[in-house]
Length: 245
Length: 242
Image (tube, rainbow over all chains, first blue to last red):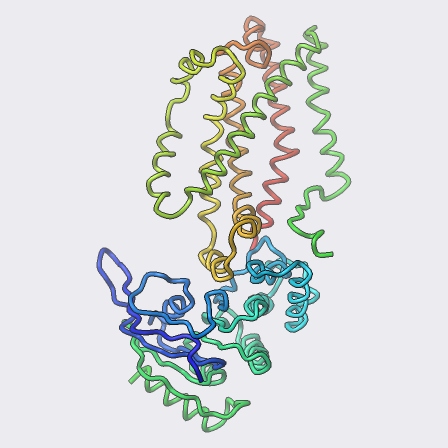
């Protein structure tokens, strides 16, 4: 599989009290087209920063982000931890936001947004504002917005961490179904190992700060994954031991 | 269909609300009539003085609000803000009455002088309110507009404009409050024909007229506040609720 995005020797410092603090230490990764790639690591390890560098949201770093053939910044989407829906826009308008920079007429946009609303069961909330929605519904809007522009790659920054476990589980299942159907490349950050194992094709384990790649593990569990199987527990233990050696 | 919902602000909530609103519109006029009758003032002169002052303030307000809003958008963030915002702060503290005699020398005893001076008074609260409104934008909202490459009109309409409304409204309330005070003072100093300044100066000897005049002014301010600013403030806060 060709790489959709390649990170080469990414190094990032934060300034804290006038001192340079090393956050990301020479990280290199290749994300393949169509794969579900998950970054796991302890809290504060710089996973989100790495995701922001890859997506172009964070611009000050050392190293190189190389986009694959026929890829541009406009082929990227992002799902935010706290949804990042604009409170003054309706659900419809929030989803439409990702299409505004595309060369589409209003009818085409309406058709695409309506399709996403249907896909995510959000039709009756079309004219609602985010404040009228539950957390799960809000993140559905966030994911619908990310998918509406038909991106080649979607970055997800702990998209389920603000949701209760039941809603998170439901949403993970929906996301998997959509991913299998539409096959965008997904790069997701999480600190929950079971979540990574449930979703990912490959898992990069980051060390505590300064983050390095401890290992990239291929998830060999067959899909659909049974979270209570012995193999699942076995891989979960393996990943835990990598994070906490 | 969805277009009708865009940025709709529900201001009037019931029939009673509308009735009170109507009363608020009528009250200042009724009071002015009553005032003219009691003090045997020429109604036309009284209305004319109020009208002229309101127009001066309104023009100054429009200019100040527009300038403040544009400056706030230009300088609220980035490297430029570090250099420019302290300058605005100094200008805000500048004793503007000190340059009023100079303005009179340049432009004479004209409407231009009064309006210029009012703009100087009203602009700063609006500017700083809009800046603080824009700075309250959550970082991930900005990231969302960046990842989806919002620019130009789409960026303005969907992000900058809605985000700046609460500051624009709050700043306008404070700015106009200061504006009313500065208006009367400036009109007296510049001694322009017509306007509330002239009115108060003309009746300086008569305590009752002065008190009634101030009361009339307060009723007008109260009505404008209840009719325009309070509903706008409520609506702008409602739209920012998460």
